[in-house]
Length: 152
Image 1 (spheres, helix red, strand yellow):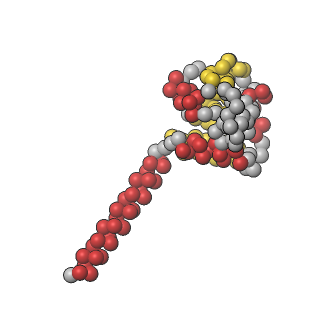
Image 2: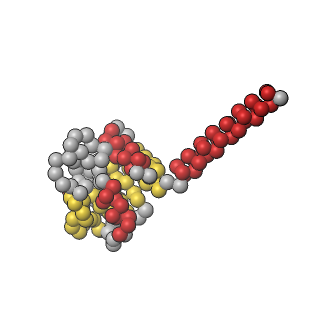
Image 3: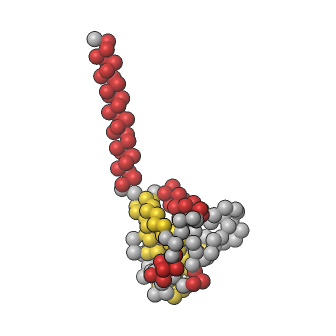
């Protein structure tokens, strides 16, 4: 009798653990999906992907050694380019853009192709160091800079 109780108790624990793992998996599956194009040797891109994942996104990392082709495909002007390009729904997000700007983009849904934080500013998500100044994130449409989308 004692052994049956122990076995039933263990079975219940196992079922609860499996159910907990399934919920975790379902949460991961239901996360917002982002596709990130990055150089396979870039560590800061991995840092920005981790930042997006911490903010509820499921990031599919696509390694490529020809990032110029990606920038050309999405019509990202030369002066706006950074080390990686992420695709959120119909928008591109170029570089180490903070969540405040990404959320604004996805909530407001402006008539643009994407936003960019040019370069690799110190302290931006995925980059080491301290933030030294406000970051201007630019709006881009049809390969042209429309203006400042937001300042963070």
